[in-house]
Amino acid sequence: MMVVMKSGHSRDEFDGVMRRLEEVGLSGHPIEGAERTVIGVVGIVYPELSDELETMPGVDSTVRISSPYKLCSREFKPADTIVDVKGVKVGAGTVAVIAGPCAVESEEQVMTTARAVKERGASMLRGGAFKPRTSPYSFRGLEEEGLKLLAQARAETGLPVCTEVMSEATVDVVARYADVMQIGTRNAQNFFLLEEVAKVGKPVLLKRGMSASVMDWLLAAEYILAKGNRNVILCERGIRTFETATRNTMDINAIPLVKELSHLPVIADPSHGTGKWHLVEPVCLGMVAAGADGLILEVHPNPDHALSDGAQSLTFDSFERVMQRTATVAHAVGKRMEREAVGATA
Image (cartoon, rainbow, N blue to C red):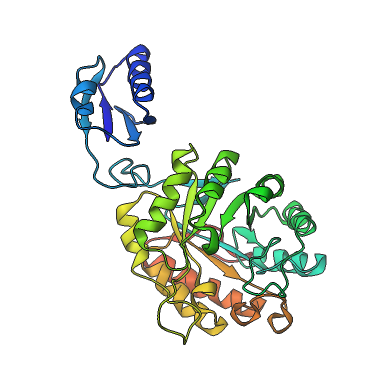
């Protein structure tokens, strides 16, 4: 439900509505527009509530919303949300690129990669310090030492850091170093973790669950928004289907669909979506043409020797080519790169 306040309502009238919602076990989330204030109501709404609220001073009307993901929906907030990460704007009619290694391996690897991706136009640096791996015997990250290396790379290059948080126990340590808290596919419906990450207040990059429907994905985002954190970036990374020729099935439909349903920015992860470095470029172009607000790409100085996901990682040269061609497509569909490569002209 949405409560539309009258133009010129008083603060006492607004506070009265918020108190009433709290009394009946609901939470109100105000959105202040140029002319009207709207309160999004989250919780189980009983049928008579609309009539009760509409009799209160300062209330103009109420609107029932059938969508279970109220705070994510276009009905709640028609205008696009722009997530600002230390000056990098995701969802502002640009294509923001988050690039870096799948896993932080060493100081030399991280620093070399950070310099290379910045020079080629990346807006943020990605890198895994805590790595979710299918096998317990695979490299699982450098943990806090890896986070320190990412912070060192940020200090030199100025690129904000996006890194994954794996558990409630690691939320605080990741928050000390990260600018964007990433929720990976395996934790996309770990609702307790989503709520804990939301409380930190930093932007959250939420990947689609491995076999999640679009509704599952948006409801996961709703957990974060319902805790008061409105800075959520959705990430399509492919879903598991019967197809085995690629790592996942990249759902290009999801980009325009979710942008119709939700005001949140949506980016794409062609690295995990394909699992093959030579497929990353064409999928990047298709996702940007479909309306993606950004990309998250795995880049490594020597993919053949990567400790994680080398087969889907771009070299510096292939990343440069992807950035150049992506910029061409972005301009063709009325967007621009959030950051241009050093020496590039718009």
